[in-house]
Length: 195
Image 1 (tube, helix red, strand yellow):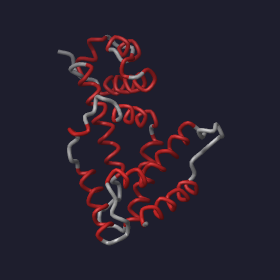
Image 2 (tube, rainbow, N blue to C red; image 1 turned 90 degrees about the vertical axis):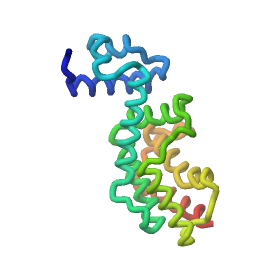
Image 3 (tube, rainbow, N blue to C red; image 1 turned 45 degrees about the horizontal axis):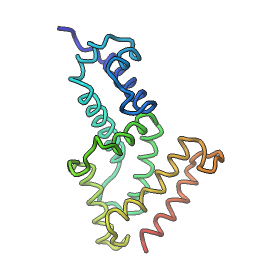
Image 4 (cartoon, one colour; image 1 turned 120 degrees about the vertical axis):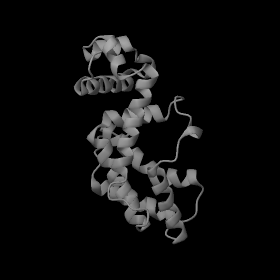
């Protein structure tokens, strides 16, 4: 029996994410992955049962990393404006430290591979849900349907992140997200959520 090598496992993960982001899920085969990682196809099966296992583990790892970073210094009892701004900053740091993982995460999360009704309640979701409930109870924000709240609270942030990672806007003009630009959008979001 061959021993596991953490370095090889990391290379497999990285190459799989690169292939999926570049070529989509259909572009990932174990043969192509092995060639890209410069290993034999059988080596992949030391770390992952099959393609589905690899995809699910990659998603769960990126999701856990995102949730850990998003909750850094966060408490659901803090004032809403302070907490949402911290969420924006934490998410920005997570996304910009490894944009490829962000693209993979978004691709997987928005694919038919995820059945949203099967998503489990995590510590992250519990904290964010409680945070919003607290803000509504304290009348810091309006009570809104959940979908509308999420679209307003995070939609502008993710649009700016996409422009930042693409280094241009939809009009093709050069763009870089600064804290000042992020704060300007954030203030407009806060006004919308208080209405």
